[in-house]
Length: 533
Ligand code: CA
Image (cartoon, rainbow, N blue to C red; front, side):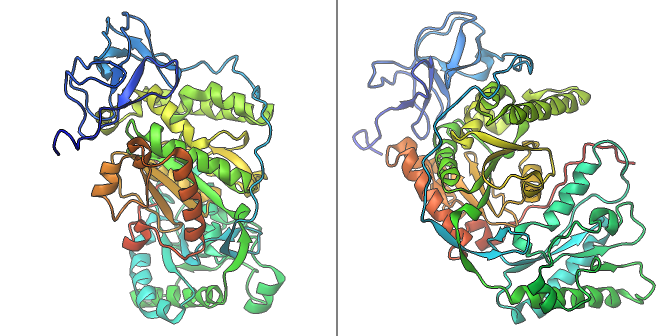
């Protein structure tokens, strides 16, 4: 680029009280650069990294999002690069004496008239895809199931054009675990609730080994599958609904490997028949259940993509939909913001309980929430977990928080069928995604700044890039470019609406996301805080 076409030097401030801002320009800016405000850079500052807007005394709070993300370890003159080595990180906010449900705001105005085409389920939930999922009780069966799923896709699926896919729900749990230990209920209920995700139409089948600790009846006890309404009983015949549909590999009836494969295929065929009979119908946007998550974050995550997701989250709440945010270590430093936004004291108490549980869990491993930030986060300008958390929380928008889930719990079981919910999960992308699947999402939104090819086989994942440079390089992996906000080409509201409209298209099956197009599917990773034997 010539001098005349190069964009003007630009920094972005998040709040009028902030004493640092981040450099917006691709490639960063050299020392000597003068901004329109008259501020002159003393150091070279990489893109997304912080510049001191004023002279900071040693020990002074460094403010971003109007929150102290640390204290200056020495005097920092205006125009300096404020990198992580210049910041002393504050202690985590105490869980005592937090503001409880103090924010009273007028309800957001309803947003009416938006619909999508979805698959209604007998339990009242709505799917955005029509997928046969095959549940497993134990990792031992994964190879056999993979073999069977390949054959089902090649030989059976073409005969059932209304079925989108066949997915084996494989995982590393099931045996070699202390199944009675405190915490073991988390992976078990996660797996149970994933099997009941709205995108699977209530068609549950299980492949088990036979000798494993996690027996099929323990995974899916009688009554857990509330799927069979009168219409499907008529369709299915009397045998269905009576018990669990299990193919057990150690069953003495099996002689030879092909006997196992044939059994899985013939059971799958019965479920495919029923799934194939389903049709999309017009449903209100309130049937969306959206999980939002960020991964591979940079300093732009909290400036472009996450605020746009937050705006969209408010649109979803206004439309009567359910939206869920997660990632305990990425909200821990903003817990006062969240307890104050709780719809009632019970929700705030539940939030505090989840934070305390997670603090203790991390302490057992002799770490704290600061173990969260990655080398990539720091390279992208995020100095520490406080700064990362402030940018992460904005995904939740401004609605009151109306419910809290413990890891692996399902929204509908907790009576949450509307509004903004918080699901306590690790921030690890694939563990968070796995737990959000269990919560019952039918759509997933994932923001990234450094770039990750993350995707799920079970629900569509809409990927939002925080920077135009990433959106340009990963043009066939990113669905939305929120980097336009930093470029000045779009507003937070523009991108929020773009995302909302895209959600309805994707939910209706009219549009595929890039990860669906390329079939980029991460493994299910169950959160197991209990011992392994
Ligand atoms: Ca994450």
